[in-house]
Length: 197
Image (cartoon, rainbow, N blue to C red; front, side):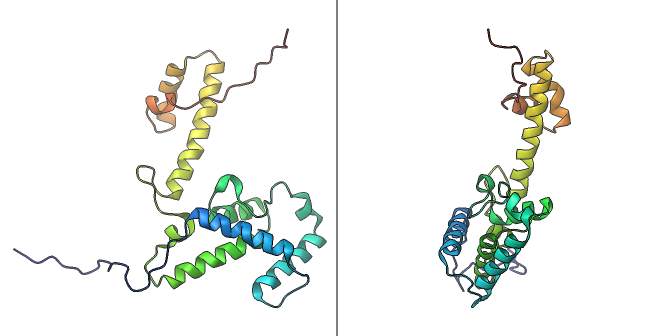
């Protein structure tokens, strides 16, 4: 019998047990930061986080486009409960400055990650652990995007007169899925354009 090598294997996390920051906990932090920002005296600038908030308010006051983007810039929450890191990149991709409570929440998560001293994976810290049979955050997000595309196309083909089964069979190859998985999706349908009688 040969002994197995432990070379390259990770030791169990015993050195510095830190709870993994779940996405729900991050969203609670985000909301708490927003409430603290609303209730603080201004200007403050005594700590780096307060300075960040003061800078945001000066920026918001001097740039009308930030106020005009109020429907896009969510304060104290994220769109659809997505992880704060994903929300940060949504702002950057759309050309918006992220609000300070989002940056402060991500700073907390970064500090938790560093305090774990190597016992926490970066993706788990910021985006949550993989979900069994669904994968990591990127896999789940990409599947959601593909499902939306498939639902739109499925509805479009059905609006043209195809049956759901025939449309699913046609779209299975395009969306790299089975016709059965596409048939399970609820199609986006064009609204009925006939006037009510």
